[in-house]
Image (cartoon, rainbow, N blue to C red):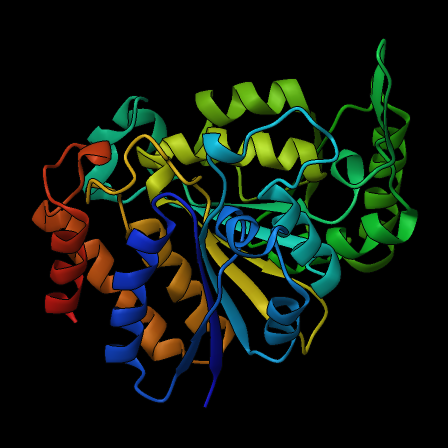
Length: 341
């Protein structure tokens, strides 16, 4: 019996987590759930984005299902003030979640929802493997009245372990994305990825792309990619670009994983969308798809496949929220997936 910690978070987070948990309870009755506040909701309740008690609960769980965090009420330029995103960064660091996996597979029923032409996205099925606990997000930060800096720092060991994740996931090839024509961290990144390739995965084709070219190619020729591996900041940006291939950020799932044996965190890629929070129109499919990734991770492979099949069926039926061209509410989409199950 697997135990799941749920973190609805802020904005539309609670609205998308609720129907997702209801589907999981229906699909795998043996799962148990424990809900906690996190992000901005935790700042309001406890003054910090993640309490020690919540971290302890996550460490004791089999997996974590997260909604979204953040919103304008907690936005600040004061470096001493708590921010919801500190909960995310702290969770990733404390749980050792160094690998963020973001599959991008546009569903045929939603091809016309993408801003790109159908011919350009047909056949796209790629995975962005983003290093999640290093780089500029975690480097030393300084700020004075006249200047500021953020250190981008990587060790060889950090690059080696994320490269291995990418090579193991590859079906046809790995594309390593960097900025090696400018950045020393990227030159080390490229050298290390190639060393891992030569020593352990020489049978997997490997190519390199500069991050600006990679952004262009994701829009121009997305079906050319299989696995993209890149550092933290570049992965954050490129995966959001890739999300638009599916028609909406609301469709994209993700899994954040560490070493074997620890809990993974599963969450949709989108943010808290405070502009539509409370209106009942948020797209829950990214969260539901993330739950399918979670089930697969927990060994519930059949249940995961059933949930994904239900999501695809609902999209074919046209029961969609407005971000992908429909008019259904969050609850109606959740009910439609349940009916499919």
